[in-house]
Length: 364
Image 1 (cartoon, rainbow, N blue to C red):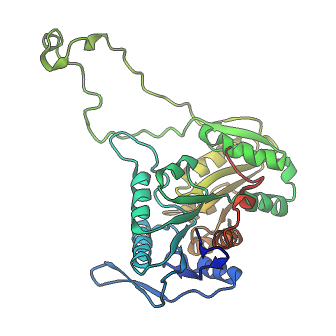
Image 2: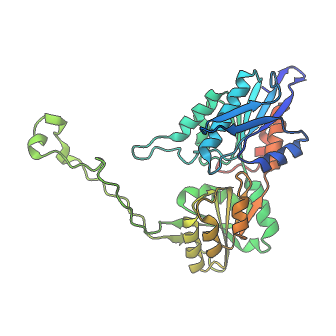
Image 3: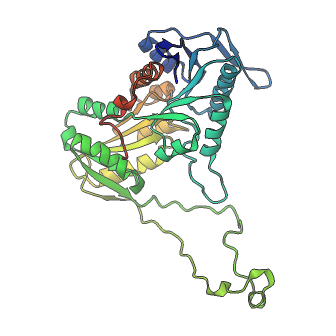
């Protein structure tokens, strides 16, 4: 896909959006190439404008743009850059999106929508022919795309950090923050030869209803139910669906006297992690680490982490968080640019990608 014929390789171009310039520089340095000239800016009316300063005709173009807190601008920049390359006759347009925006909205909830599917459609229509990303929220998201997508794993880097930076990690236990994360926790535990624990239940916070939305509307009156008016017949025989009620937060597993390592794919709102850390400390854990691929760290996350009983939060640099690190000394960063640059090199040279997945894949 990346070559124009047998034995002939297309020139490579590396374009950068505005979302994560530091990561792009690391990738370019590892690849040994310079960034191509491109200007991405906002006009006075906030419209995004893209001007490519070099010819992309017949070339393989790699566009590096990750998701940040300014997520909608990040997506529009990526799509406009891809479309500009498409209309300028680039041969292949590969989007390097370390953190895929809207990946958490991959399931239907109430009367919402599966926004991730819409995003996948838009990215494909914009001109992208291939996407490189890392640790999608759910691996099934790959099926939303009509183009090739490589879902890389950050687990080797985080596992290496555990082995190199936690001296007594053999006394640790991997913690799944909820039952849905058990597969991920099990994968880490098996590679580190450790046990696992699971957080069950949820913190009791009263949810405020926004008002009657019709989903709990009562059956029709008896007069209507006994007739065919409004198709009400038979409703009196329907069973009543009981509401779900989760128990308070608890730990399934023994963490007493152990180092608790909570693993997840992203850290955004840290309130739940702080609550879990408090429960783990109450159950006897003497240190609590939080490991995740994407460190969004929204709102006042640095302050909450600093004031919490969490000892360290370790994330990769798929999302920029230098400001948050200056506000909280507990936040540590692991560099994953080597994997992204190797993925780019292999795709460009038509080499197999299996090496990057061998023995490191999560969630079989």
